[in-house]
Length: 160
Image (tube, rainbow, N blue to C red; front, side):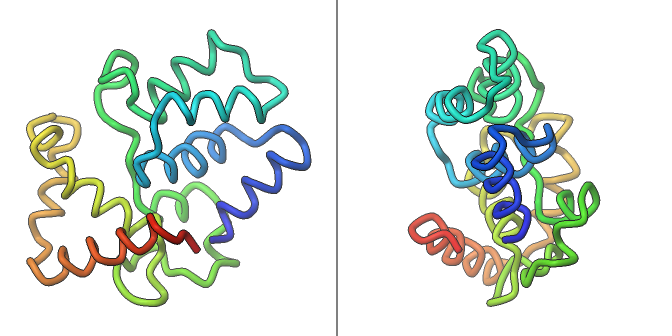
């Protein structure tokens, strides 16, 4: 996972990462894995030299983790590997395929994204801003969703 490795390296080496890396790589991975939102905020506050509570709370806890239940954002900032591929050049150097959710070459972000949508269908399917996401999820057959769930469970217990 080149994007995650680079974002972690930037954070460790410089106590800094670009906001896309902070929110849409590190934050997204934590959201999709189901890490407790306040723990992500605490980690964020301890890792970045420019972390200030009045900025971090709404951005990390609210937007990135949807930990405020929708006060800051109208939907969770959940995305697949395709988003990371569109907004960065990390995927060019990564062994995982951002378009694939199942299999050895599947991008963990993509697997975890589809699993997140399936897991939270009752909570978010009626949200107008997630409508298209759920229309795409509905196109997946039961066997593919089952395979996604198995791989997501494996990733949650042992991330790559």
